[in-house]
Each structure stands twice: as C-alpha cells, then as structure tokens.
Image (cartoon, rainbow, N blue to C red; front, top):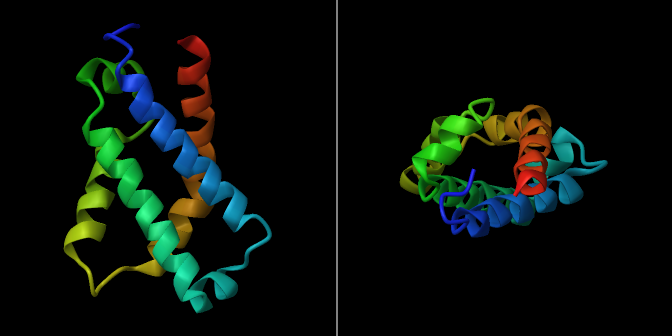
Length: 114
C-alpha cells in the first residue's frame, strides 16, 4: 500500500500518542487515574489527537486495516471535543485498558509494512 506515504505522518502521530498512553498508564489504577486531573486531561488530549489524525487518513488505509475501528476513534474525538463538560472518564479508562493495546499492535504492523 502506498497512497503517497503522506499518511505515515498521521500514523506516526497516532503511534506517539498510543505509546504515551501506554507508558503513562502502566501501573496506574483506575482510582489513581480518576483522582489525577492533569493525567485525565492529558489522556483526553491524546485521544483527541489520535482522532484528528484518523480523520486525515486516506480511505485506502482505513479499508486495508479494517481490524481497527477507525470511525470509532474519529467519533470519540468528536465527542471529546464537543462535550467539554461531560467527559466520561470511565469510558476513557476502558479505551486505555481494552483498545489502546490492540491499536498499538496494528499501528506497529502498518509501520513495519511501509
């Protein structure tokens, strides 16, 4: 796959945020996360950046790597950006625990193929 490889910059942005989230959440408990305002805001910002990068990916990339729910990542970004006062931090935690590790593996696969 080579839709001009411009999309790799976006994949690298996603990869950077995934690595940040994994590093910062290592050994972190749900309670510690909920109590840390700075970390909550940083994690939300990382998800926003990832969503923005996803929105800029070529359709071919999303179609080739269907194991990632790209539309949900982009949708989460929209939800976070437009609902300033209603962030569901339990949902953010669930994403960290259950979706970010899977995303990391696929992003690694994409980067290794290019």
